[in-house]
Amino acid sequence: MSDFKALVHKGLPPAHCCCDSTWRRMPNGEQAVFFVTGPHHEPEPGNYVALCRSSDEGISWGPVETVLRHPAGGAATLSEVSVHQGVISIYVQLHAGRFDHWETAVIRSSNNGQTWSSPQIFAPLPRRSMIRNLYQTRAGSWLLPYQYYEPSRTWEMSVFDDGSIMTPWN
Image (cartoon, rainbow, N blue to C red; front, top):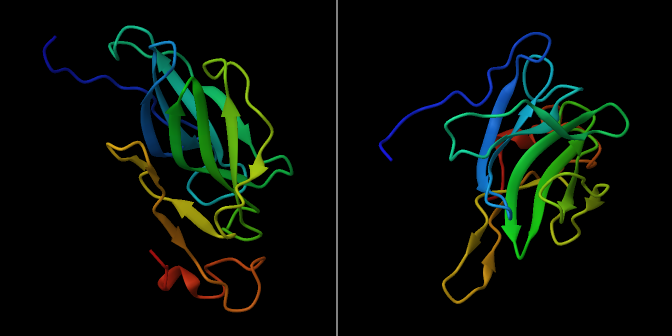
């Protein structure tokens, strides 16, 4: 097959935002692109995680499927997606819309993304963290690089309000 390009999704009103995309091969062989969408930009209340699928090696893409919305109306933003032993794991940030009241969570699917678990706090990482490029070594170990914003006062504050957006830990 020769090189080609295809439009997976274009953000249109009322969901202009389309960012943080991650391509993965699903357990059933389909391709999927996971991304953040909803309202106008990120971060914003109403951001949510979505996906589009392709069953023809990326030549055409299906409609947007909602994967996760914040249960209380805040924002759900995407950090990383892994597919391992038939299970899709999506690592997300759940926050009130400005990276405030920010929890790092994971949802999982064992049926090719037809259904998803409820978000579970991802306890190995501190609050206010994002996974960056999950990597599996040749030996089979997983490396989990992450970015973290240390609160200057309380984790409930926005990283914009407490200034930690300027000093991430990597």
